[in-house]
Image 1 (tube, rainbow, N blue to C red):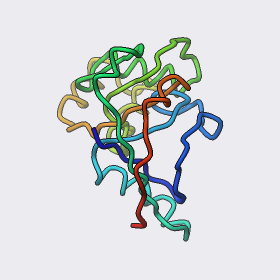
Image 2 (spheres, rainbow, N blue to C red; image 1 turned 90 degrees about the vertical axis):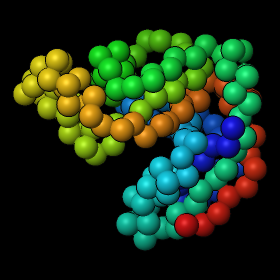
Image 3 (spheres, rainbow, N blue to C red; image 1 turned 180 degrees about the vertical axis):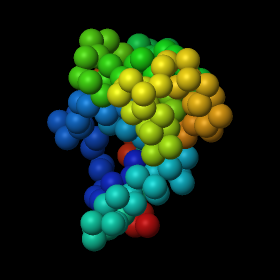
Length: 156
């Protein structure tokens, strides 16, 4: 599988030292199989006057069975609970790899409404059901990163 990471620099050796803990799936190295999604991730850097660089990697999907993996096939109550725990830095799980939808701006607005108590969980899930997930994969451990191979990068 080909995976992409959008940033302002080429990342030949991904590590966990530069990751933040209060994001969708917690501390980790985030990639996507969707080139367009990686290009969107570059957008925030380009708006700050930096280059947008998409780094490309290969990952053998068969190696998932060697890793403790959590996979969300859609936006769901379980996905919402996991995102909220990670963003609140309350995640105590030990997954090597987490795969699922991105909390993009539209999705994040729904998550925030729920988080702030303005809508209940049922309403949040109902709204999320109509969103087409963008896919992100979070490599959360050094063990998982060993299976990711850098292939090259390009400026966007």
